[in-house]
Image (cartoon, rainbow, N blue to C red):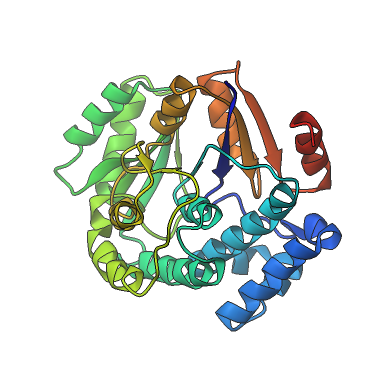
Length: 311
């Protein structure tokens, strides 16, 4: 039996104009941008449609912007009656997945992730943390390199994206040392990332504690379908468990490869990436080219997805 998963992008996928085409054709999508601006108290629609890249790259702007664009792009699928068997998201995208599942409301979520972005950005003094993408090195070897680099500080796997692509995070000196060890161990390439903090490392635990207080203010409702948690790569159907997973997510590695493999093993054969870019689709293709990957970010991709799904 065919199973469909909704997949939602994370930070880094943003671009000026994301979601604009679909908002121009679907009143429900246009209403999402208006609702976001109202909830946030500033015109995020203007920032997304006509702003500049530098403003959009600021973490506390990026996170609500991607959530808004993703939820807007979801609206035509809702109108077409497409309901997933489960959903997942890449870091921030897990919040989009929970909004789609009804775990919490969109207006609450968009203000929540803005606070999340600000807390994450301020968690570690600027210039002391670092992240690097390691290309072409086996997971076990990378973990060994991180363990060997611990003496100057923290260096840990932060994102298990797909085979041959893992991101490490931590203190600048330790990550730099780990990157060198990864290259010596046979990595094809190591790319230092332009980020404002060492996301998904143990250095973010204090941020998680602060953010937990913000989550306490949010109403977690009944979920209409399960969401795969980044932390565990397991299905979450209990809102109370979802809350705990979101707190832990800030300082734990994102297990995207494990999540995708789990869904494929469980019979998922159609993955629809909803929101800006096709990063997750690229991960899926590196894991299994036999499953179908679709995306919705503009009218062309929406039309193709509706056609492929028989709508």
